Image 1 (tube, rainbow, N blue to C red):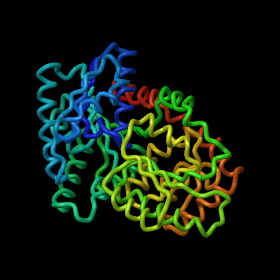
Image 2: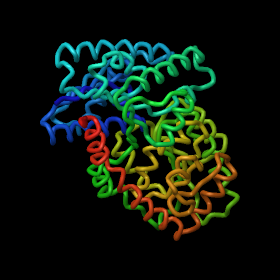
Image 3: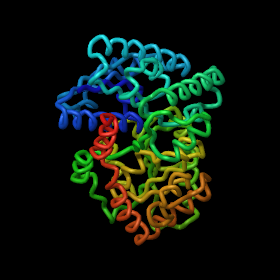
Length: 402
């Protein structure tokens, strides 16, 4: 038994890349445990990061011994070009796999419908072909995306073809599946499984023992933060404006804003911080473990994300990681949290993606030690069901079942 993986999100520091890398490594470890099987991972990566090989090696330190990773350089801009190239590369990878291995004992895992178009053409592969659809992708495009209409049509067509032909469709939540079916106007013919983001218990255990985790209750400032890719829908601009408004709440300590990550909105966020004269630090992308250590040091994580489909239907990996580290969370009241039955003030503090409301919620959390403790303890309990090893076991069982 072997597994071939083709994904655009694997090498990198974004939440998507971290999630895919940890999930795939967990799948490969489980494949070896059950069948002594091997994994071959093809990962798309832009040309420039590929030149920084020393940084890529650090991301592969936890790679299982039965796994080979082959980076595939790709041009990702404009997006339509990246998607079309991904489609052709995926097709040639599947041809290669058929020639080398055949189909009888091969599991194929592909992230993104456009990458799976070639695989969906082979009926012999469909039974053990799992395609992960993580978002209604066109909703995440900035308004000035080149060839936006053509890109949208391509993504919609790819989703429909894959929904009709893949043996297994993996989605991050039942709500995501519902949204996908309504938007694409087609129900999957194959099996359906939910594959949420998760946590690597080994990494979390290391972070919990880190010196950086030891929060000093006597420190002279509150640290309010965000972690992740600075994309337009994350609402980090809203967070900056909210922190600027905290001066009206007469807190007993000053507030420092810590933004863990980087991305296309970084310069705009830096301009806003200078405009409001905030004590603000932006770390840029960094090693996952180091990022988690910073996340664990926050007094509160704030995610005032905007209302697009991928945020309404998915629990971001940053939320699950904050839960397991005991960091209180303020987040936009997206549908997925209501669907999960999570309660305001018990598991999360809900906000509207508006600076005034976000500022009020931050002040409420910072002023109440009881509320912070309750959020922390309940979050740790919630995170227990999101271990990658359990997610991998469930997915592999579905893939090998008749």
